[in-house]
Length: 300
Image (cartoon, rainbow, N blue to C red; front, side):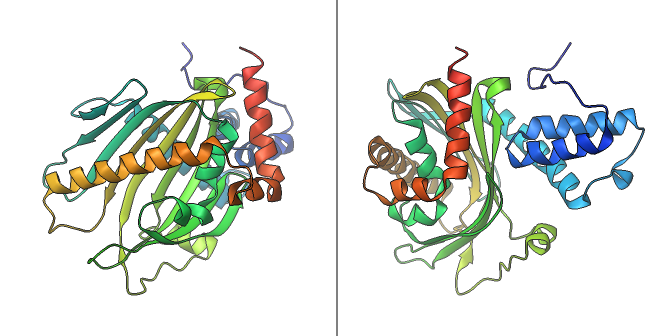
């Protein structure tokens, strides 16, 4: 029996064409397909990863991203031990206590009646986070290794406390054919020396406390061109052990609700804003996702 997330496709018989297809799929955020082609090739030719005929960094990245994305899909679906705190007709926020840990775990789900491209712009334009993310003083995109793959830096200016910073990698996964959704996966890279070296990123602290985003995911499931379901799950360590977990959860819920309301207000209409300008300046990314959404919606 075929797994729900497995993609159906015809594979070319020529090995060089297969390798080209892997690279193309990965760049176009078709991570599941890139991963399945790798696995198919290895099985058919009885090869291990050490002898796989593509760049080892690309091979390892596809394997790592696929494992992370699979884990995050599970986290988005997991309902065990979550405490529902804020429930309305269109919005639900939950939190979870993590024993013997300073980590904070939050989840939200909402039916959003917003232009989908506008919503994507608010998420994708990391350099504009300081315009809507609470306490964000500095936000910048450092590198874009692929069409939907970004490395960014954010610095939070918190009242009374020391500033917090984070170097984050994020990438998109096109799962429209498998689960009618688009997945965005993020985490900090402070301890991933191999990734830092590969992309030549220096994460040395500069008078800031580095927060750890163990994982953060956003899943957008299309209903129609102006309506979608957005789910998000986060697990992070804000490096504030001196604040009781109950208080921290309360504060994070307040911040989360503010971000949700701010996001909805800004995404409703971006005409004349920096986000509209960004869409115009980056046609390759936005035209690609626009076409993918249109292709999907035309089938239903």
